[in-house]
Image (tube, rainbow over all chains, first blue to last red; front, side, top):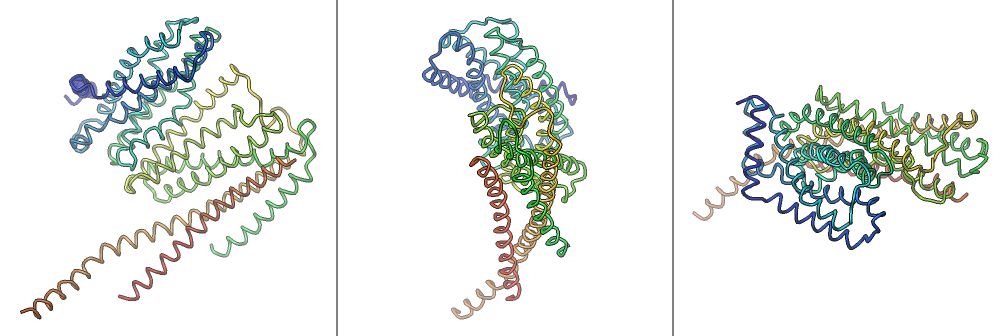
Length: 225
Length: 244
Length: 43
C-alpha cells in the first residue's frame, strides 16, 4: 500500500472517519462562521444593490477565518501521537500525507460553505445577477488555494512559538492574490457588472503553482522538524 | 577588510549628499506637481533597491535549499532585513507624496500595492526566523522565501487587473520622463544602492559575529557542568568528613 | 513643500533608526565577548 494514491486514500479516510465521530473541527468552524455572519450583519445594513457588491468580501472573510480554525488543528492529532516521527522514518512518500491533509481540509471547508451559504443568502438578500454556475467553480478554486497553502504553513508552524498566530501570519500575505481573485470574482458574478473569467483563470494558475510548489517542498518541511 | 569599509562609507556619504543636492536643487521643477514631485527621487530608487534585495534573497534561499550553505542563509537574512527597511521607506514616502498630489493618503497604485504585499510577505519571513527554533529556521525560511517569490508575479497580475476594473490614480508618473530627471533619478539610485550594499555588509558581519558568540557560549555551557560537578563532589566529601 | 521635507526626513529617520539598532546590537555583542573573556581568564 505504498503508492501515493493508496496512502492518500487511506490517510484521508482515517481523517474523515475521525472527524465524523468527533465533529470537532466542523463544530468550531460552524460556530465561528455563524458569529462572523451575525456580527457583520449588525455592522453593515446595505441595500440589495450594495450587498451584492460587498458580499464577496464578507463571505470570503468569514470563510477565511473558518478555514484558519480548521487549518490550525490539521496536524494537532499527528503531533500528539508522534505520527510525524513515524512517518519520517517510514519509506512512505511525504506527498501522500500532505495531499490527504489538504483534501481533508478542503472537504471540511466545503461542507462549511455548503452549510453557511443559505445563511448568507438570507441575511444579505443575495441573488446572483451574473452567471451563477460560476460560483461553485470560484468556491472550489478559492478554497483549494487557501487549504493547500494553509496546510503547508500549518506544518511549517509546528515547531514555532505562538503556533496559532504563525499560521495566519504566514498565510494571509501569500494568499493576497488569491483572496483578491475570490472576492472580485464573487462580486462580479453577483453584480453581473464584470466578467469573472480573468479571476477564475488567475485562481486556477495560483492553485497549480502552489500545489506543485507544496508537493515539491513538503519533504523539506517534514524532515525539518 | 577593515580599512576598506570607512573609505567606502565616506565615498557613499559623499555620493548620497551629491544625489540629495541634485534632487532638491539641481533637478528641474515638474510642471503639474511642483516641488513635491522631488519625493520621486527617493521613492523610486528605494523601491528598485528593495526589489533587488528581495531578488538576492530569493537567489540565496535557493542556494541554501540546494547546498545548505550557512553563508547563503546569512545573506538571505541580511537582504530580507535591509529589504524590509527600504520597503518601509517606499510605503512611507508614497502616501506623503500622494496626499498633496491626489488629496488621498492611499491608492491601489501598482508599485505601492506590490510593495505593500512584499513588505507583508517579508515581515512574516522575519517573524518566522525569530519565532522558530534555531535548528530548522534556515530551511523553513528558505522555503518561505521561495513561496514568496512564486507569489510575486501572481500579485502583479492580480493588482494590474484590479486596476483596470477599478481605475485608480497613478503615483509616480507613468509615461516618458525628462532626461535631466532621469539623470537625477539614476544618481540617487546609485547612491542608495551603494548605501544598501554597505548596510548589508555591516549586518552580515554582525550576524557572523553573533553566531560565533552563540556557538562559543553554547560550547562553554556544555563544558561547564563537568567542572562544577567535580567542585561540588569535593565539597560533599569534606562535609561528611567533618560530620563523621 | 512641507510634504517634500517630511518625506526626505522620514526616509533618513528610518535608515538612521535601523543603523542605530545595528549599533546597539553590536555594542551588546562586544560586551558579551568582554564578559566571556574575563570569565575564561578567571578559570
